[in-house]
Amino acid sequence: MKKIKICLAGATDWAGSELSRGITDAIDMEVVSAISRSNAGKTLGEAMGIKGLTTPVFGTVEDALVTNPDVFVEFTKPEVAKLNILLALKKGAHVVVGTSRLSNKDYAEIDQYAKEVNRGVLAVGNFALTIVLLQKFAEMAAKYIPHWEIIEYAHPDKKDAPSGTARELANRLFNVKEAELEVPLEQIDGLKESRGARLQGTQVHSIRLPGYVISIDAIFGMSDEKLILKHEAGPSAKPYVKGALLAIREVGKLVGVHRGLDSVMEF
Image (cartoon, rainbow, N blue to C red; front, side, top):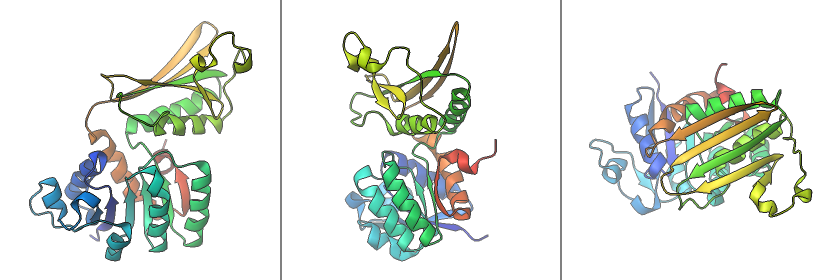
């Protein structure tokens, strides 16, 4: 069996390290290079305390791509993710994006270049299968229910708000339609901020409190009835591994940018 060769950016971070273990256990893929500035020059096994894992760790994307991976997995920061993705495409790799908060404009530019080099980019942001299902169910609900809002919760030191997961959900719902408001925001009597932020046609509320890890509610309402779709994650990154492995296996069949893990799943 020919294994899928993977370059993993952010390999020793919270999510990347769990994915590194998942890839190591998979029989059809291998990490041929990893990127971590703080662990450059080590092996991935030394950096993570896994015996026998001799994958080299590089400090830059350019250096890591000399291993000619089939798939580049982007798990770093939004401010460098776009450049990393374009570099990987230029080197001939397909790309799986786990980094959130890239804009629609960013993805339009990436899509154009990916098509030019005949490579696929699968942008997921959140690989948890329960999130994928929540997004799909929410799109279905938005076709029939005119009113909805999003509440997302996270630990108090999470700086980005709304979260990438909330942004992606709002984007998906916007592709269906905008949520209706009985009272327009400009007519609110009081603090307009109390109604949350208007993001692509959806009111989004970000809660940052101790006791939360990652959680999101998509709440739909009609007269005398409501629908609440809820996702909650624990403190580990294990929920994201199965979806990420699926993305790695499927991205080689794509050309151009595809948003969401559901784009390679059957429903």
